[in-house]
Every structure is written in C-alpha cells, then in structure tokens.
Amino acid sequence: MPQFSDDLFLGAAQTYMGVNINNPLGDPAPMDLGVGPLGRIYVWDVVPLTKQTNNIALSQSAVSTQTLTAGTGTTSVVRPDGNTVVQLDCPRAVSITLAAGSPVNKNYTITGYDYYGQPMSEVIATGTTGGVTINGKKAFYQVLSASLSGATSVAISLGTTDILGIPVRITDRGYIDNVGWNNVLAEDAATIVVADTTSPATTGTGDVRGTLTPSSAADGTKRLVAAVLLPGLAVGPNATRLGALGVNQNLVS
Image 1 (cartoon, rainbow, N blue to C red):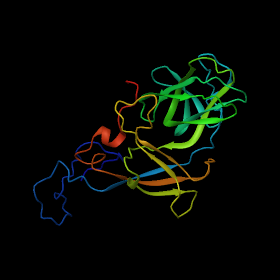
Image 2 (spheres, rainbow, N blue to C red):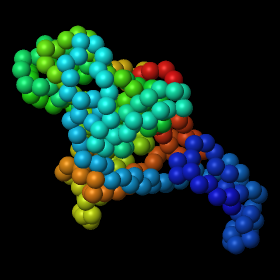
Image 3 (cartoon, helix red, strand yellow):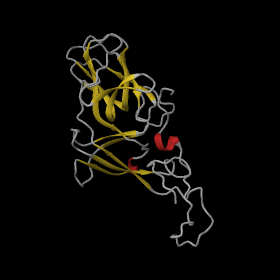
Image 4 (cartoon, rainbow, N blue to C red):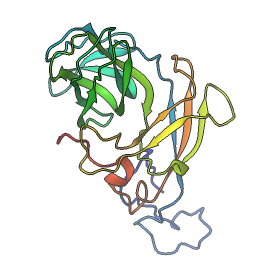
C-alpha cells in the first residue's frame, strides 16, 4: 500500500486493499478508490506564545492607516507576492487596545491572510470606552494592513489574543475529542467557537474553521494537544475543500 504523508488528505485515496501479500483477504480485485470515509483524528499540537497588546502595531493616534511594527512573538516577513506582513507565531485572533480617554466610535479594519494563505479582513468597532481591549473573532496568521474609518481621538494598538485558530473546520463541538493543555491529563475547560458557515464570509462573521481559547493564558511553555475528529467531508473519498477547511474567506484570492 502506498504511503500518504499528508495528515489531511482531500480526495479519493488509492488503498489497493487486498493486494498486499500479507493481507489475509485472499487478494480480491484492487479497490483503488478508497474505502472511506474512515474514522480519522487530527492531532493539533501547538505551544502558543504570550499574547501582547502591541506586537502588530504600536500604540499610535491615526486618522486612517496605522503603521505595523512586529514585536514580541511576531515577525516581519516578505511574502512571495512581495507584500510585507507581520506574521504571528500561530493563527490567532487579534485585538485592538484603546488608550485612556473618550474615543469616538470608528471602524478598525484589519487585512491579512489565514494559515492557508487566503486573504481575509475583519472590522472591529472601537466603541466609545477608553482604556479597554477588544478582541476580534477571526484567526489571522499574517497581517498586511490596519486602517481606521476616521480619527478616534485616542491612540490604538494592535496585538494578539489567546483565541487560537483551529486548523480544520469544526461544525460541532462534538468533533473535539479531547483538549489537553499545560501537561494535564484531564480535559481542559477550553472555550470553543464552531466554524461560521456564512457564505460568503464578511468582515463581521466569525472564523471559517472555528477557534479555541484555553482555560488559562498562553505563555510560550504550555502545550495544547487537541484531538480533532474528522468527518467524511474532511477526509476520505467524499472529502471536499469546504468540508475540511470551511467556506472561503471574505476576500477573493
């Protein structure tokens, strides 16, 4: 039987079931279209770094476009298309932090890419309360730009959160078989938000695959080991890209 190295395989896998000399089935006719969908578990293993309030954009008073600056836990990267982005340690939602004062409510738009290179954007309303941090819902891997619909009257920074982007689509919490966190055998009381299936996605919809927030803050040491059950739409002969990775992001690639 040939080896398939991809942990997530989309399409019909050629199994050649029964033609192996060690197979006791008596060499039936080769079954080269697969025997799925079989049960499959995706092991999600990540050690996220400590979240920061300003590791994508430092606090600044901007009228339109903010200057991005990679900080602790992020890296400035030039993509193959020539765009310079701030790359996160792993896919996670971003946050905006408003300085103290009485801000004017404006729309803050973050544009970037997800873990699979799909262009995406999200709009976060700043609100009118100063000295607060507002978390986004979509898991970014790279941030290309950040802009405001107008002056807010207070400085704003852009950073990371502990809301982690699940690498495969989760349409029901039951597909999370186990969440291990910080070397503890017991199930972690993580917060799981399932995939937003709104199609097409918009700047205000949730993450297309879903997110998970561990029960305690990430610190670059705690390891997340989550066992994710993959349904037939994610792996096997009937698998689809939508079934495995969710609807398209809101920007056309």
